[in-house]
Amino acid sequence: MVPPVAVSPLIKTARWSALLIGVLYGKQRFGYLKPIAEEERKVEEAEKAVRMEQERIAKELAEANSDTILK
Image 1 (cartoon, rainbow, N blue to C red):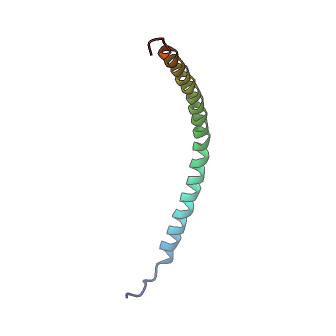
Image 2 (cartoon, one colour):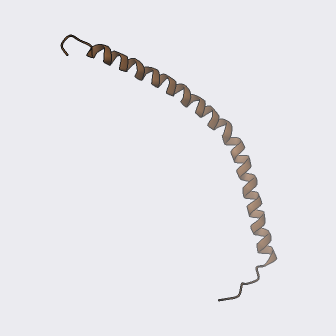
């Protein structure tokens, strides 16, 4: 097995800096996108409620139309 190579302190510093910058950017981006996602979730819930109501009405109409003497 090959012995490990000594990594330059400059490279180590650059790696840690990139990691920290990435974490900070991710936190900032998450904070920006979170309210947008919450608003989209609220809109989806409202649309789902409307869709469920329409499906319920359609189901009731289908049952009412199928209830005939000719069964």
